[in-house]
Image (cartoon, rainbow, N blue to C red; front, side, top):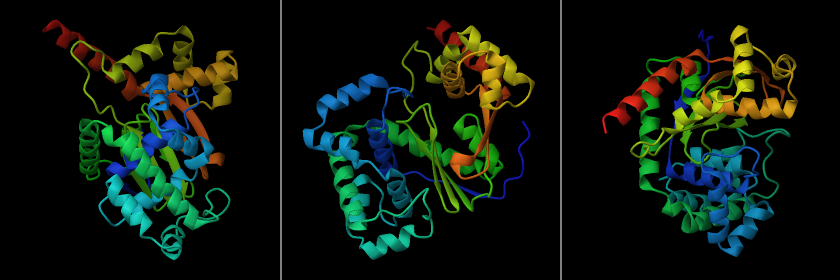
Length: 318
């Protein structure tokens, strides 16, 4: 794969407050259309466990402006546990918040909240309650694994081009925005797996990439191998991959070439993207006007044999 020059600066960050926000938005935005690895059972269980007050706040649009909360976690100069971030957020005046967000926020795509007092108080309360009722009980192993992955990606900053590192971390997104931002920030996440999540600001792109943080049990298929097996277990998806092997295609070209409906192709492409078999090239800006093309991701295909061999050999040693 040839990677074009990318003059934007790339950083990798991580803090527990990020994953608290990821988990909250994964729950509040769940629609059943784009199911995460945690699945509908996770959502149903949380709906039974959470207090009526918190559920009412979430269902009433309490998690709106989550990208702005993400931005504030990045800019927080204090210890960024959930408690540490909430304490800092509550200490900020309206003027403080305005000065922090103003360089990154402008226009209709990402406007400042009309009432920064309400924004601050709502997010302080929401994250505090979410931490108490759910996130505080998330396995420490997940948080440690995310921290380790962030550190590993930081080490790669010295040896990999920015776009190459982004493509590797996101499992197949070649990110070439125009105009190119001053900074792209990579954040590992667990609750949105296997999907990436993007947030666009003035001069800044934040990409939350998936990490399989927990090891598979003895004899269990690793999540990445399971996604590959599911993606390849359908004739229509194999035909789409053959179509993508020739040259980059737009979504409309995939629909035309496959002879399937848009909704069916969308479903197949979701599974192929989640498996890492498709290279998604994102060009242009803002996100609503980006040109997206798809092609076969050779590194994903090459990894299939390695993952399958490792799984079968480990099983044979038992």
